[in-house]
Length: 259
Image (cartoon, rainbow, N blue to C red; front, side, top):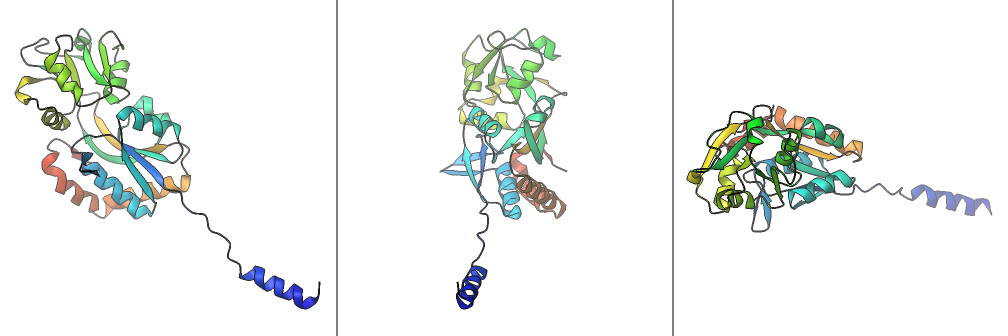
């Protein structure tokens, strides 16, 4: 090769741009859980949704968002790299399963019954084990009650659909209890067209607070996870999180803002 051709070839190579790595969108999954996640007219909204969308916007990370049954969302996050989930309760037995990005909000957990049917009162989780509770497969209530001594097929009746819990409680004599929080129970009743005067609040579970988090599959890119963590910290630090909470506070009477 002549010197002139060599020089021309070198100049062309030098002017070529090295292709940049394109960030693949993170897939965010969740369930319908008003007022945290509200699915209306093809849109996913709600308090937690607004927080999560702002976190991804600040982190400058592209994403897609879908709402599914809790079981599907939970399992997708467990099994697939690059999938994140909210609002998921952070519990000791879930700790090693996910990367916990940060806390979104906190609430309580309560055992409810049907008025006019036993149990008429409860004082402990041990007393509750004499009765049958309906739970959503793989959600916090299912997993927590299993840890507390309940057993599938014995005193746990497992279903897939959140809206069916209250219907089961108020229509079937073999279902005695459900577990929910003081906030979502009212939305569930409204969606199921059930009068809350038919529901009894029996026992608050002090050892099982609901700490809702944004979490991701453990094998998700560490740079992405770091950006998400920092974005949530910044959101709380500059007061933006508090402003979102205040906009939704009328729908979150017993919730606590995240610190």
